[in-house]
Length: 120
Image 1 (spheres, rainbow, N blue to C red):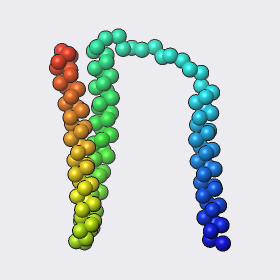
Image 2 (image 1 turned 60 degrees about the horizontal axis):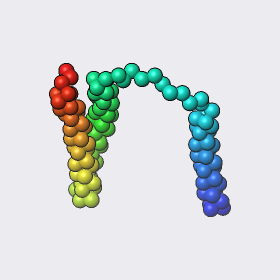
Image 3 (image 1 turned 135 degrees about the horizontal axis):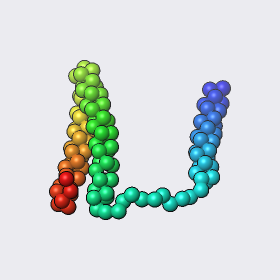
Image 4 (image 1 turned 120 degrees about the vertical axis):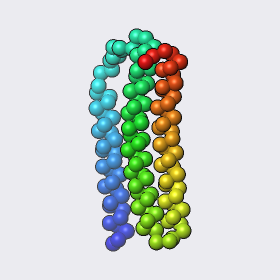
């Protein structure tokens, strides 16, 4: 009996997944393709667009990294001396710091590009 319930759950989840995926694809196929007008007419606009993208990226990465730092700290505190849990928390801390470093480098790279091109 237990096998039958698991099988039915799998079929329901697979059916709902397919329905959602195909439902979204039908709305995409129904859309009429258009080419949008672009406001990018100079190098200043390209750099401004890159700056905007990097700013969004920077905010998202910092928010995720902050969450990961807090979660890793919580995991470390609640590890109760378990070396495996401490190792996992340490890895999470390292990768969160790597994410922050990548975000800062991307922000700095845009500033360097702006300086090279001569944009304020």
